[in-house]
View: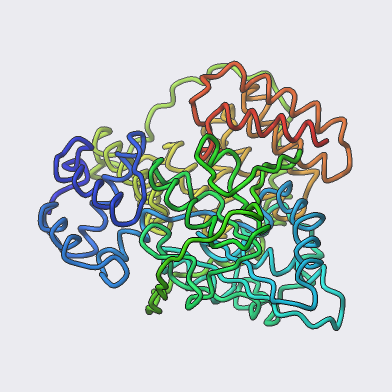
Length: 517
């Protein structure tokens, strides 16, 4: 069996698989992601039992994208996405107060309301739209609402259909949304039936599928939402998908994308509408629709994935940490810490071997294999108990799985090892926010900024917390600071956790927030 290190980004067969993914699924693997793509291919080899890249490539060539098991495994790895309820509050403000009321007024008494969430991931976005509509529709008012949600990742679709979510999917949300629309269910929260019934989920390939398609209920749409999807496409694919989506809208229908995702591309019959919260697109009333063949996406069995556990004691654990938190002191370069010696007679791994091991753990984290990250990180810290990066990565993996108490424990151990690092405090701030401990979250973000004054994400997150408390002056001040920091960076750089945007695009988004405030 080949190892991950054998699959170099410049290997010819790997490049051919990269081109195959582009031509079949429209997914563009950009140069900066080649190492991650190489890791994914290695894990797919393990899953499918192939022993070399050439054999694996031949399997992909022989199989259809929608029916091949190897394609299913590969695409599920590539398209591991993150979503949560009411992501991007500015766009949801537009939906709630402008777009959806306008669509309801237009359709009242004459036709169903038709909405398509393309690239729906695990369902939070589609269900957020359903919740908004439930709020807007008068009690007892009869409406035919059809929300179709599609994705190329079948594991994500299976999770979406179950509609069971951990706390991480609700970050930034107030408790009343959860209490009104969700019920406790097996360590998580399950969406109420009447909201689930508003959405139908199905497999869909935006590049290969033909639409508009009446047989698939994808035609004459009032609204299409396709966010954080075009970032995976090259220019030609973006143009093709945009053209099909434009004619899948009815005249006057709306398209919402991620910020700046289609900037600079030919919009055809779409017209940009600029608001402080976002740029959205509306199909003009004059351009006639072309005739396209109908193609109903096949209904396929889905794989199941484990559900995150409920953080039963995370809030108390975090409060205990905050109560014992030492006062702020001016950071200085930490001394080099020697590796903890193993007991006599033990067989400690050489430092180089442990670092090679940790490199494998990082690759697992990048492809979303969080349980494997936790298990292997535990092995690393048994060999080197003071391996800061392993403790931190374990904390992040626990948080992504919803194991918040364990995440707090691992983050606290990372802080013990490197008290002047901002990363553990930034992670703990998000856990505090999820636990509705807003004051604790603010304290932790302040500490992260104190330790790393250029941490843009912390300023933006802190601004959002102050905005929740209606302290717009403080929120604006923090956003101005973040903008100043961004203007000092390389315009094409990408910073965590905003990897989907360049620094220029992120700066433009901050300006829009400031203009809207």
